[in-house]
Length: 343
Image 1 (spheres, rainbow, N blue to C red):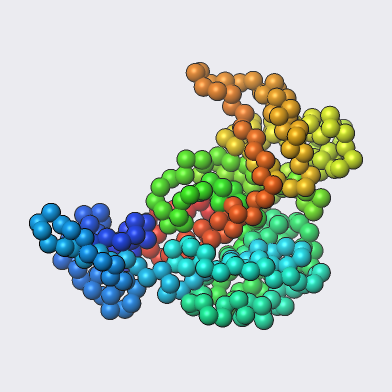
Image 2 (image 1 turned 120 degrees about the vertical axis):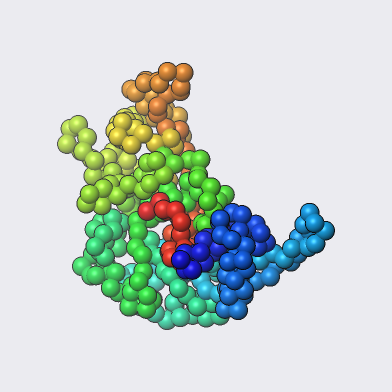
């Protein structure tokens, strides 16, 4: 019971910032006497800081307390063919350091050891780590994408050995979808994002894929195959990846992407469809949107068309990074979470 009460206090402070003892007691339902004991214990162990005084209605000033967000950090890695992006965040999810580390073609996980050591120098102790890949990820392995040197190895085991702690692995577009959904919200904020139904498409010569969120939950599929839209078959025996190549005429491109969007709309019904990547033709999105709405003209009573808004994002890295930091921060506080996260 004591641990549960401690977790309630930590969760409240993580979600709301500083507070007085009476505010903590009122919000958590824990008695003021018990809150006082928990606060004193946390002050002694160094997890809590005094953050000033607040005027009270009785003329006395109540002391405020907040968690020390700099006692430890999380580290997130974005793996790319040309190198790895390192991102460190404090316990509240604020980015405190980031750096891109170029790597030779075909690099392996073990080669990151000296770069990781240099990156961590001067940071608080690392307690959790997240790795994002441009590939379908499950069972500790990569099953698609361009990082072919990782295909035949147990990447999970390699990363765990590199960091010395269990590392969470995920797909880049799933993480970007989470980051886009939570724009403006801190990782530990209790508010529910307004946007909970998103599909993020990447159309690029290096690979084609999608990240899907439905009802605020990331969709992976039974075999983690959800999002492999480049392999989606089309009439005539071709696939989506064939119809978004540079040499494909605009009319064929429009028809192919509208077909893809129609299938996604009728399956997961996103509110927004984000497009990014070098194979996207932004100037054609308005016509693709028109064709889609022409094909799927369904309206609920007194509501708009069910088709998603199409959004062109030339760089999804800010959302991808936010999604990684969200996941890493939630893992950092997994013992005190009172609500589910989106994964």
